[in-house]
Image (cartoon, rainbow, N blue to C red; front, side, top):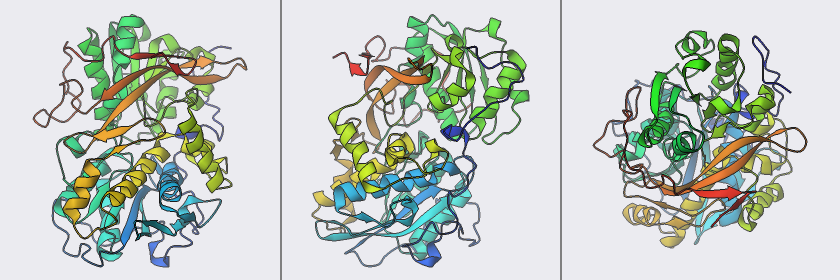
Length: 505
């Protein structure tokens, strides 16, 4: 087989998860059965949002009964990541089932919520699910609805980068609130905002690319690379981590191109990239609905995609790659919250089985929002990020014997946790952001001729400072920062190889 040819049309099936994110809320208006009617996620609050950045104190923030955790989940049912709405609610629900004795209200949709969750005698009540669309204004409307109208005192979420910045600022202005981020990957929400009641039990976009530049430069021989990434906080962070890694080991970034998130016609941005004979490789951090469109524009303008010249962040997944043809085999991919399916341990197997025991089917993003085994959704990072947040909430409550009246004590307990999780232990740094092991992978062709994702290395214990590259005093990752410069990184040459799914240590 050959790679995708010029002007070819992408034949993506429903199984092509990350390219099918315009699916809206993934429901028919009955998504919130089991929740009060006013919490319908398809109808975000139209309270006049003034477009601020969340740094003003909410006058009606929750001050109610401290004997119950009133939980609100911030999902994203519209916009470029709208297809993940079912996944993220499912992650939180499964944490409540596995660790707080909850029962889901539907065996075919996570959006119907759960009931019966309790930790140390303290009930956890789901009061509402927020419907974001990847914009700060909308997510602020939704968190205000959950907190100020529905009296939520704990929030899990949000999903996306700019949303995370807005919610971190909102949390900082409302210290009685407890927020556990869902899977939002921008760096600034913890490194710069530093809200003492905002916790992130996963890596950020930069962390997830630790070690990728080292492999491409020192193992694959790339000296020059062009970077194309979404022009918002997560795209900047993801590209920033790769640039810092690649340049630290001696590589050079020749071009940085940043199309706006949600772009539909990428031809003018692809035109800004060098031709394949002018650069050793390309790094892609274009996500959501843009992954398919940007790669199609590249093929139409510059020719076939081949694995020896392309690498990407988490959105460069094997389902999408399968549509590109087998010549894409060999491409490297940065990490995410979970590991590819070739790595299986008893803890991972038990976790995935628990999802299949909880629901009959789930219409997750990787099944095109069609019914599929729940373990398919549970194995992906969007679901798992919200799962880790739910586990952190449960363990934090257990550490204070269910007493949520002293928020400082609760927050101190959560901040001091080390979670023993299926895909590896996670603790927090001084800014309450995850210190994580990063799994790097490569696309390969299996015996059936299909493209699969195989883990090639694990980079242990990466934190937000990225080996001293970033700090609260450095600028946020942007179009221009970090600069391309050599520096020592602790993991250079020290990644743990993985062979046939087994770490060689």
